[in-house]
Length: 301
Image (tube, rainbow, N blue to C red):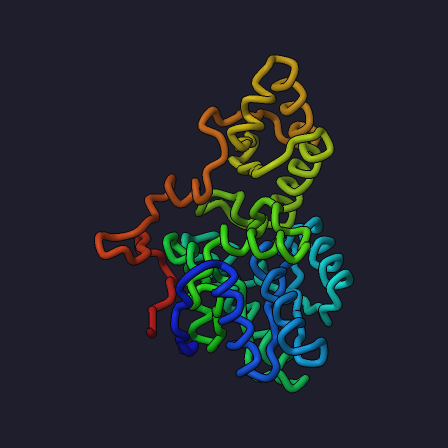
């Protein structure tokens, strides 16, 4: 079980000072580094606190990891002097993951930490951290269980950093990811129960790439429903592309990725919308809950 640290009260800057003190107390840390808002912030602060010699950012690469996010991760590492290595992960060959149950992320993170921790330890890094934040605890996050089982620390969550805090401090530090939309793995675009394949992952990635090239900004998801793509846009972008010409352009861009039909969701982008469709949520106590799934991990905390 990862150790718990006292939640830092006060402003985001106060929490950052406490984070720096926590990092310095560890001596050296390896960071699970995706290039998202949270892990980019954590890695950059770690370099300030410990120096480049005390930090190792590790990127896990697989077909479910968006190429655009990899490019961002490498750019942040280069610009802020973050030492980084890459390792390959192979979660798609785990039939439990490929079947895409509601606890899919548990198997993905198990694969990640099983490969990342030995790489960190071999280089003299005994403390491994991830970018989980305090907001993440309000959603169904089976991957967090894998982190706990592998003794991965989540200092941002433990210190009470919200996503807004992290964006605020990232902006103050000039980290370009401060305004980056959230970008979970590509498998999150497939409804639970739809098998995860390289072809399907590539299809949604290409569709989203085409929409970005078209000029769609902000949060964006192309959900894979067989021959049909369901496009979720932020409220601002939904209003912007609602005109007939705009909708036609969006549909054409997504069809270019191989979808026969395209539906623009009138409700817009909703984080965790597939969880809602699957009946996954929080129980009365506030703990994450989900329907029973064959092969599901038994919590050990």
